[in-house]
Image 1 (tube, one colour):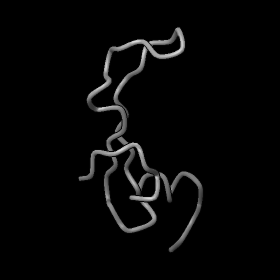
Image 2 (cartoon, helix red, strand yellow):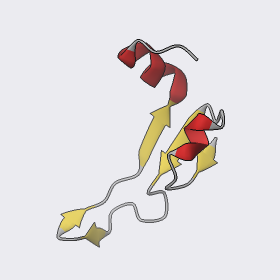
Image 3 (cartoon, rainbow, N blue to C red):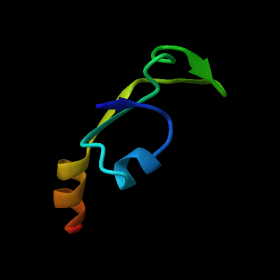
Image 4 (tube, rainbow, N blue to C red):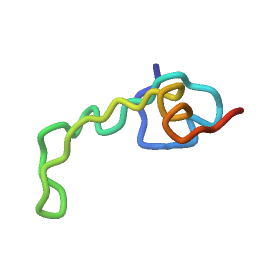
Length: 51
């Protein structure tokens, strides 16, 4: 698990990416920011991608 804003972590093989961890619930540009958990395997399956 990697907590970062950088999507490149998925390209380097991180199985799970957590974005906006420290900003969860804050407002940015008039919108509330929520933490996101991105699962690499689920994303690949959804987009029909192979590595």
